Amino acid sequence: DSGVTQTPKHLITATGQRVTLRCSPRSGDLSVYWYQQSLDQGLQFLIQYYNGEERAKGNILERFSAQQFPDLHSELNLSSLELGDSALYFCASSESPGGSYNSPLHFGNGTRLTVT
Amino acid sequence: GQNIDQPTEMTATEGAIVQINCTYQTSGFNGLFWYQQHAGEAPTFLSYNVLDGLEEKGRFSSFLSRSKGYSYLLLKELQMKDSASYLCASPGPPGTYKYIFGTGTRLKVLA
Image 1 (cartoon, rainbow over the protein chains, first blue to last red):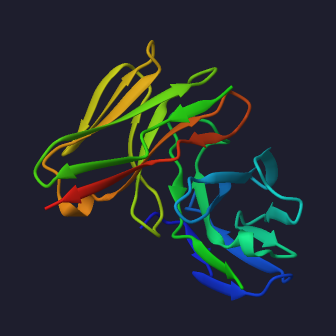
Image 2: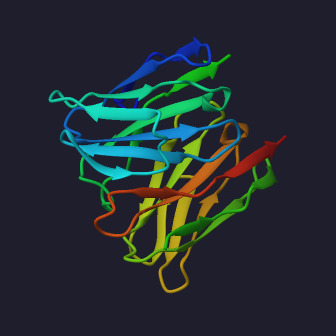
């Protein structure tokens, strides 16, 4: 158990809808990262927060947004959903602000989103 | 720029040894991580190298050569449960706050 909690585990919704994915980092970790993984694809970095502030952005669509709250949990909002948004969405946390050699990422079990 | 390359797939036999290679081009190199990911599951941290040489952890070892931009993960006494994808990753350049992942090497262990 990595200590990172993601909810829900599975989400099935229709095109055009909006969903919210939730992540609670490991106790003591201030950084939260969001990744998207489509079937048989690599991990695509979406966005990173450290202690409530956005620190880095990857290939995140304008239809997607995220935030980290004062209690350090994070939410990823996906709107105007398209079939191609179907994927596994992982949250990961680490102790450091990011890009640190002594701070590996610890991943949650992911949310599997299916857009029909 | 930042780039990490790994072979897409490898196959090996139960009980054997397999070496999964990773080459990287990064500016401001800050270490290399290896993760294991079973299909549909979360990546789990295996090892980390920041200095040249071999780090051993039971059946798994990881090697780094900074001058060559090269790392490998060595898996010994392969078991069926080792069938998974193995991801090589590196922190991005200082100030980018990112981790860059390779696309992963899918390892199939055959009986």
